[in-house]
Image (cartoon, rainbow over all chains, first blue to last red; front, side, top):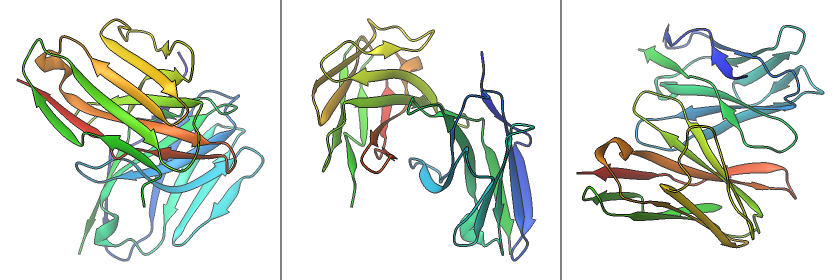
Amino acid sequence: GESVGLHLPTLSVQEGDNSIINCAYSNSASDYFIWYKQESGKGPQFIIDIRSNMDKRQGQRVTVLLNKTVKHLSLQIAATQPGDSAVYFCAESQAGTALIFGKGTTLSVSS
Amino acid sequence: GAVVSQHPSWVICKSGTSVKIECRSLDFQATTMFWYRQFPKQSLMLMATSNEGSKATYEQGVEKDKFLINHASLTLSTLTVTSAHPEDSSFYICSAPRHSGNTIYFGEGSWLTVV
């Protein structure tokens, strides 16, 4: 079946560097995408979302890019901090249906 | 504060018993709620869609007789794990979309340990 996946299971960066986490999705009908951060023992925490009518959206220190041509989603974190260390999931949905989550990327930030 | 509340946060039960987890939308009505399960170091897997006033829709491979879902009101969905076994030990989490803002909210999650 169709699913959302991630290119890399782990990403290690130095504090202050920019981080880029990638996600490939396969359902071309998906029209809503969200990035979540999950810390150990907790539920997913919303970071940023984007709809299919956009290709870029910026938040505070985060940017999400959507490339519908190649069905690719990325999360950019500027000036990564130790507190950003967590597992990051992309998720997609179609017309208000349930979110389908990707496998997750573990981001480790060292000081 | 929490917009979707889940209870209990954690529960330990004996093998063979049943456990009920509640998911409440606190300040909005949710005709639909979603239940996920997450095993350690894995992603959230959709188990079922809970529909107010009708039967839940289960994902492939999820036993509907084992994971009973009831959505009797517009603010409450319950997931009951029947005849729990150690392999059911997991993190269970619900979500509810608020259509007025087209936002999806997650509960805090429930840790289930079956011993």
